[in-house]
Amino acid sequence: MVIGDKKGHVGLGTVKANDVPGAVKKAIKEIKKSLVKIPLVGTTVPHDTMGRFGAGLVMIKPGKKGLELLLEDLSVL
Image 1 (cartoon, rainbow, N blue to C red):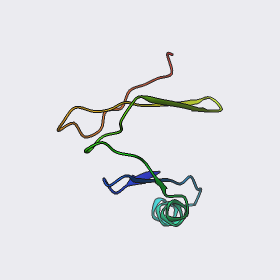
Image 2: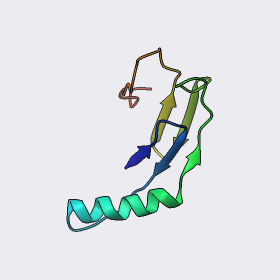
Image 3: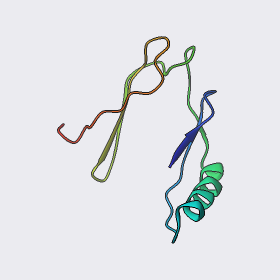
Image 4: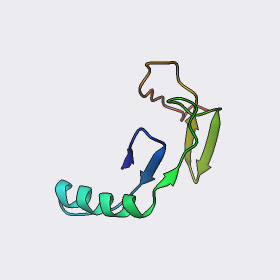
């Protein structure tokens, strides 16, 4: 689970639980401990960024004004 406040703070939490509400509560606790500050230019990131962890790949690109969130399947790269 990833949570942000639209002011440059983002956190990531991955947990397991027997039910969804329990997993959400645990994830929120973990996210609060792992918040990081992301530099912003206006309401977007300043440049393209790509990260990899194991088999996962994340690409962050600056967005146009008014664009909220765009998700793509990067598994073909």
